[in-house]
Length: 325
Image (cartoon, rainbow, N blue to C red; front, side):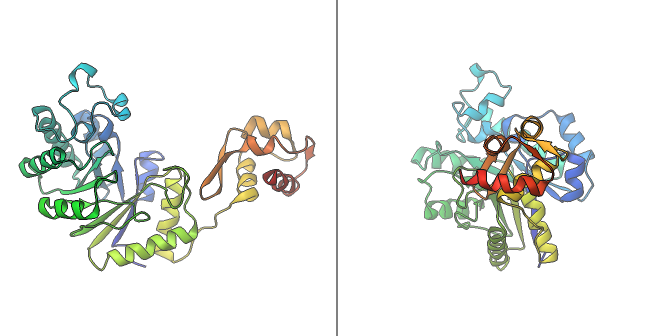
């Protein structure tokens, strides 16, 4: 197991910054995508983590996403001033947005910046021209620039040619595809897709994480480092589990089905207990009972018999029955 070449983290902070920095050595900043933070805020982020802690930065949506994107709801730029933003348009606004991002990366001592383009940014001649103009003209500041294109129009051949020409790294979810172009690093963003019913709503199984490790090992034959950034609902636990597997070669125990529900209830409810008490104290909790199935505790507990449950074991039998209804 090679912990030095496989770098594990999350997209955003799923817990406090202090606790997160005790668990991981890298985070992908998401807030920089939704809006450009104040300089003082960025300086505070850098000061609050150890000197070895690494930030990777997701580029501001004003560079990549059209103002019609729903993600713009979280941006402070007035609606009537957004027309010249997004889609790598050759405008003053887009270039100024990048220069601000570059300054943010310098303050954070970031080495990597990620550009994620939406499916609305299709592989048209105009978009490709704007993309090439942008990356040819900007000051990169020695950053490694990564690109995650979304949408079927961006075929592997098109992406490969663009990335090679512009010295961009192709970012992928490795459960969907491996990158077509890499250089000194590979950068994975895990969105919880294999085979999740919905993007992000997924909890990785042990087998999934073993497969992920094999994919990372394969990539280390081509690159010096592989960044593995979890971006699913269960990212904190999954990233911890994957880190443990890399360092120790074994997994933490993971509970599914009735056992997962019982464990969640035990954190909120003292035994003996009744159905009404469980619904009141733990009913709103959402639990993965399978990798791609996340339920609300109340949806199962509402089906059990209304009686006194002396112990978790007593309750488990009823939960197992309810799951079959």
